[in-house]
Length: 291
Image (cartoon, rainbow, N blue to C red):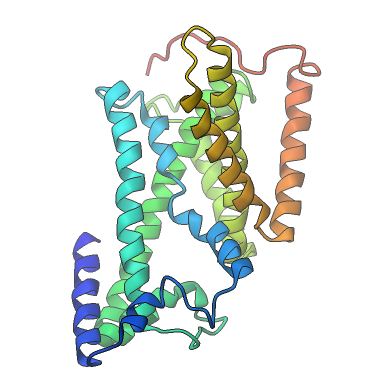
């Protein structure tokens, strides 16, 4: 995939060269175009585009597999965000120069718009190459997400937050949480058949934003309680993170928020039932894993 990205950048550079000299305004339009700029569209698009980054936290579920998790998990998480941010920004900037303002995409092509951008820059060969690469990337992403989610459910099952007999068991021969892998695959398949990519992205982002707001709130509360070593600067980061996630969550579509709130309500109802009205801890202490 790295090779394909390099090929795209070469094709984009050659395409722009053949278009002849352009004014400085042409190269700044992707950042700000007063004719097309709309704050509502920008924030709505951002709440969907943030899906590009979702999944980096899945690395943290693999701490049991890492040789030096205290160092390597943190480093891998930060590098994943940094590399993704730089590469994605350059790709989108190049695409905007190749497919300038006002042309748009049809409803049938909007989900695979980047392949059409690549086709304009490099012809049919690059169009099919990008399509194939996106397919492979989605398979790889799906496998990574399935693994991370299966491990997350396994941890919750092992801690008895959800039924341990189904979620907290390992398949004897391969030592993997096979029940969780199959369940996640079945749910993903049904979702792929029932809803559009955009709606699926918004639903995924709903859960991610709520989770990250919880993480930031927990970090803030922990630092606030740490009286002997409290540092005011350490309170700024979780407040900023919480505010950004809340803002992006607010800009999701109404349908996504309603469905997400419904799912959250079901989860909260189960949590209340499992913890006897939140009187008991939801997660129970567990013995060290033997896998």
